[in-house]
Length: 326
Figure 1 (cartoon, rainbow, N blue to C red):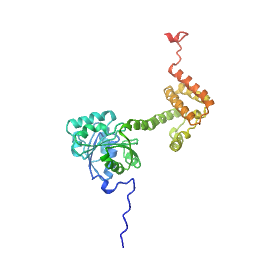
Figure 2: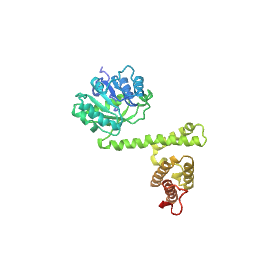
Figure 3: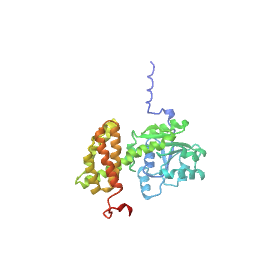
Figure 4: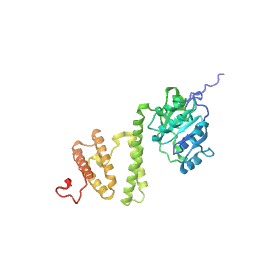
């Protein structure tokens, strides 16, 4: 009797022969991202051996997520690890890579991984010339610097850029961390990162402003009020795009929008410019997708233009007829 055939691996699951060998892992920069990724790699069987951290906060974070892993200088991290995660701010990455390469810290055959959304692998060229194997693995996730981040990596998309010969290794590492690889061309990295910042970073600002305004309006629990509303809006937007637009701008309620701006100028003037910018963008998209009737758009855009002009040139009680010539 023939033995049953072994099941085929799932498309998202690397074959055993494609998996990288168990690696020693180092982290340069114990911000919110690096320790979480190293902890996820530990769960996959790799072995964190060293981390560099400067501030007290980063040292505490490393101790929480990577207990018993020694805190050492960056050059020592590279000396101990087969796989090094460079998890420093974007603007610091080029100088760090050049410094490590110039001082001879980079070893031939060492996997050097950065997590910047902005850069592909070209930023690692100084290390590549020293024999390193460059990978760009950017998790499309917001991090808290706590253990919850490791759980959030399950199903998280990673923006991946890698040389052709390292694509399998990059894919395997992402999947082992619980993520899903999304291949991004080198030249598309800045646009890719701008898209994520536009959606995620600006969302935090908008939600924080909304909660502050609800507090001013007397709402005791803004988070409880906004949670279901924003959850539904996000779900609808992801499913339907611009077709999910609702509210006074999409309906062309120029009077309501004018009332909004007047109240914001009175109670929270710092929010007016953002409200107007988003309202104009929303109106343009609603009009282009047939949600905003052209006959209503004219009045609405007139209100937005008028209010924008007022915001740019607020009235000065000292101005007389010749006020602009002062």
